[in-house]
Length: 172
Image (tube, rainbow, N blue to C red; front, side):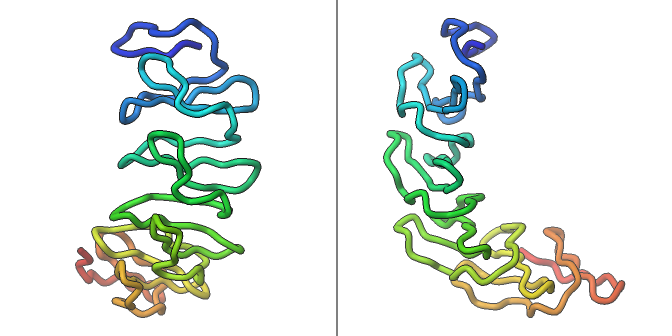
């Protein structure tokens, strides 16, 4: 495969896989290893990652072996690869899975909300829908409880379900 920009190949056909250009960078694969290149096909990182994601807000989640971390546009580690998964960076906070549970970690590696949730499936505005002991609730970006963990489901549209009954609460 080749890196394609505006419908035109800008590299030779040298890659096993090529990701979309995101924030001026693309992930590429040769065999089992991934790297990032810019739109001039200059390597930003070596081929060292087992999993990669597109750049968003200046950062990309990557994995070395089975551990996930976060790199910046220069390929420098922002969050070391110590997490079993990383998702959705917003407002300098990422959802991170550590020791089987999800929490919210800042870009300096400190926990905003320690890993204590089975899931933090959705980030909505500045609030997080979270699951604790199989019940759904909502916390804010400071980790404060906005909606108690008592619901069967909370949706991004502000709907909650409790024992089959639907109610609108208007989350923002």
